Length: 196
Image (cartoon, rainbow, N blue to C red; front, side):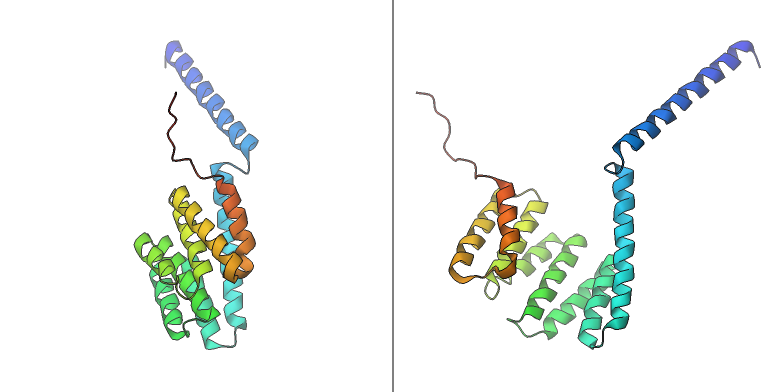
C-alpha cells in the first residue's frame, strides 16, 4: 500500500467518523422529537396497548365485551381485516340508536381508515347522521382533517356545535369539538381583494 493510498484511507475514515458524530449529535439534540424517538415512543405505546387489551380480554365476563376487545386487539396488532369483521359483527348485533351501536360503528370506521379504505370509513360516519348527529359530524370532521380538508372540517364542526346548542347532541364530546374548532381559526373570506 502506498503512502498516497494510506492518506486517502485516513481521510475517508476521518470523514466517516465526523459524519457519524454529526448524525449522533443531531439525534441526541433533537431527542425525543426526531424520527427515531417518535418511532420508539409509538412502538412502546402500541406494545403497552396490546398488553392492556390482552389483560382486559381475560377479565371480561361478557362474550360481547370480550369480542369487542378482541377486535380492538386485532386492530392494534395490524390484523385490520379481522378487526373490521369483529367490529362489523358487533355493530350489526347491537340495537340501532344505542350507545353500543355508536361505539362499534366508530371503531369500525377507524379500522376501515387504518386499512386504507377511506370511502368505507366516511360512509360509516355519514350513516350515523340520523341517530347520532353530533358524533357523526365530529367523526366526519376528524376524517376530513386527517386528509387536509380544513374547510370541510370547519363547516362540519360549526354545524355540530350549532346543533348541540339546540339539542345537546354532542354530549360529553362538546369540549373536544370546541377545542378542535378553535384550532381551525376563522373561515377564509370568499371576497376577493379589489383595489379601488
